[in-house]
Image (cartoon, rainbow, N blue to C red; front, top):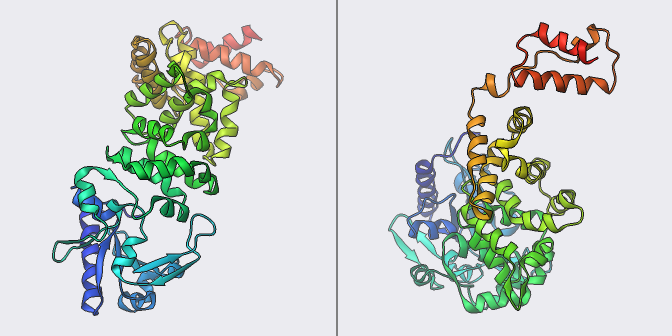
Amino acid sequence: MTPVDPQRARQFAVEVVSRLREAGFTALWAGGCVRDHLLGLEPKDYDVATDATPEQIRAVFGRRRTLAIGQAFGVITVLGPPSTGQIEVATFRSDHGYSDGRHPDQVKFCSAQEDALRRDFTINGMFFDPLSGQVVDYVGGQEDLRRGLVRAIGYPTARFSEDKLRMLRAVRFTASFQFTIDAATLAAIQRHAAEIVVVSAERIAAELQRMLVHQHRACAVELLAESKLLPVVLPELQDVAAVSAGGVSADWQDTLAMLRVVETTRFAVAFAALIRAAVRRWPQGIRGVEPLCQRLKLTVADRKAIEFLLEHEAAVRAARSLPWPRLQRILIQNPAADLLDYGRAVAAVLDGHTADIDHAAERFALPPDQLNPPPLITGDDLRRLGIPTGPAYKGILDAVRDAQLEQRIHSAEEALELARQLW
């Protein structure tokens, strides 16, 4: 897939508006791209709202350049030239009935103002005319942007009853932009936090991932706790994050501190830091990570990376005292770079001692032929020596590999001789 060029994507978004205008329709940028534009940020994608119906949109751009996947909700995807991406063009609509707490049962085409009033937050409810540079704001979004406020459009309870996921999105927007959440909006989330369970685990996990890979992840997690969403989406953290008469626990304070100092944007690192204190309290320890990841529908790769970080934290924080072969076997595994980031954050918060992490990082930076030289012998060589296949193979190969890494042997001949002696 050709990477999207932000400048060309913007030009294409202007072109889509121009084409619809030339055809006699109203067309405006809508939603998050307007918010980001007004904040001086590069929009990740562009949405266009119009009074053209889905069939009219397809007539303007042609069926070969459009997809009707969202036509039931008045949305047509317009495909751009290479490196421009694609744009969702939606007919101004009002939504009616949300029996599943996520999607409208019925949509009706309407005016731009009615369309704005059915959106989630004021900062996402504005339109923008890229041809004239005019903002079309029916909901007070510009003022809330200036105030740094995340506020539901209209009645917060009504907005959250329509789509429960909006409660998590409110937290994410507030944290990522370092805004304040409107008091009535926060109160509505606190009252209805338990209802987030109607949202699929995949969508909840996606919002958590977007929060945790952001630099303001600690703020997001704090707000999850304040909004009462945390014990619902991550009940495994309930004991750690619980507030008692003495305030929050030392473990929870350490957790938030680790999230603040984590430098990477890797989800596994932040998630491992988030659940670390809870895992240490669980009777089953790290074995409890798998059911948690399965409940959230995380990928197997994410789950294995999280388990790797938690399992090898102690080793990397004691790297100078480890035999090189043991440390080397950890550092040659794929998430080793993440382990260094994670271990450094944990050490910085718990004791401030990062010398062992520095030592591991120096070793990790060795040339590939020193960090992970090819083994001198394999199981095939043991068979040729006449050693019967069986459990002894692993012990012999590990011992030979240790001798190689410790530079006690340097050739296949020496390795074979050592194998004979061990056998």
